[in-house]
Image 1 (tube, rainbow, N blue to C red):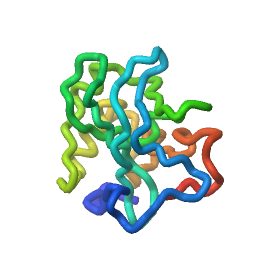
Image 2: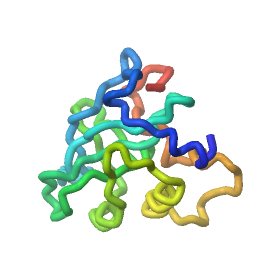
Image 3: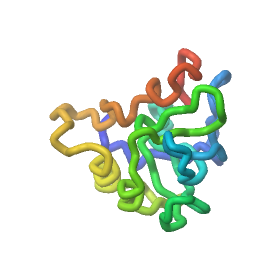
Image 4: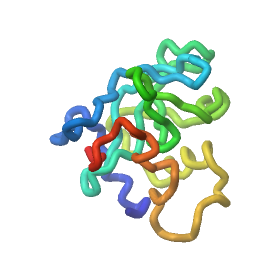
Length: 157
């Protein structure tokens, strides 16, 4: 799917879609790094209704314990993983600096291709992307990596 279709991203809450049977509903789960630093909570999932693929976690940084401004930000689903047993989303390779430069997210505001590029560039060098036209064909959007062993075979919304 090309980045030109990003204006079709929707929040799962309030949509006509629901979590696939057997897949955990991670909304309201805590988000932290591997050292247990609390970043916030999963507020929602942003997905593309046409592909039925989750693209971003909407993370509410309210109450974080690392000195970040309280706000909502988007994380590509592939930069996070689920804890093997606990109801926690882990950000294993993310620094507070990276989080601090993510753009604010506001429900109902269209996520533009430019915003998606800005988010992507927080986590990887622009040089690491191939010239193919599939913006989402990258580890950052790998749902299998995110769900790991906790996922059913078909991990669509």
